[in-house]
Length: 416
Image 1 (cartoon, rainbow, N blue to C red):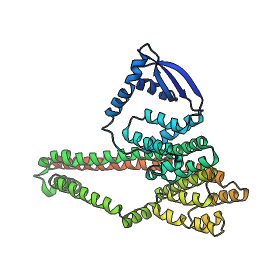
Image 2: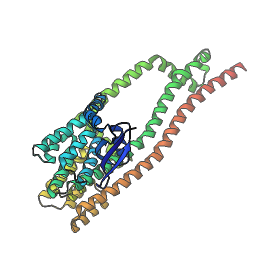
Image 3: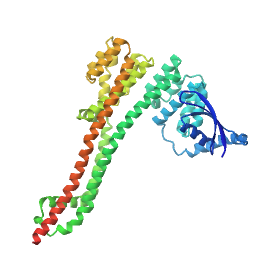
Image 4: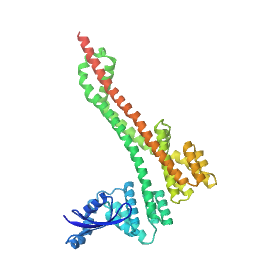
């Protein structure tokens, strides 16, 4: 197996060197990345190194060609990975242009390579990294761009990128915890629907011939189940099409401004879910504001960006009044308290931050508190939702089975 000499940066930014056996340059690169290293150079150390290096561009082209079919947009997970690797290479002492070239060489998806190549071209023509990133504003967002600008202004771009990575990882972990929490209830709901369809569509019709001659002598529960089974068998396809069409029309309406406002207002009013959603949105606002202020972004700009991170239009509209109030000379704590969506603990933390000149750290502390409250709330909600779904599923199936048994018992009674 060929041997490759590599040079890579570790998580602390220190450059290390070594050798590794692998089937190809890409396999060696993959081994280094699995070890938590960011490859800077990977060269064949064997006797045929010259010929292999001569073929390296072609092999890279072939590798990229094999990924041509995957031409989807650049994902936020890829942005996080690129930011982490760029931060490590800058801390290792690589120039920005060299680090971007390494990222382009390591990228396997053409959309990622195209974005990086555009950024590299702008940097080579004298543009700053923040201006180069601004051409992909929809991908990176205002928060990302302002963080990079603050790093360039302070001369601590690598450190700011590392803090940006930590911020993005926390938000991703929070989103994944919320998504993971909904998987099990969704599976239970799916099983309930499938079980109901199977019972009404396949099990109940098997007893219909047995009960046809009894007529009104059947118990009421059995007659209801038989009618449901018959109706499902005759009109099941129509019902499915109507439900599918209704769901499609509802989803389209919910994407309209009026439908979105109605849905967001409804969700916030739900007993448990509404409170969790409010804390989740306030967590996004607090963490974004604290991170921006901690990196030297002016207060008004930070407030505007943090407000835009809110996914709920109603909450965003309430927080939109905070920046104008602060611009007119008001205190941040008074402006946030006037929105009516912050709890007393949050207001007191902001007050302490203003009095001590440490608003950024206090907002991050508030975000950490909200993090824990959201996770705790999700666990508590699941302890209620899961048994309720199991009980409902059991009752539906049990009611159908009991109804059929009652019909069978009635036949025995008539026979006697």
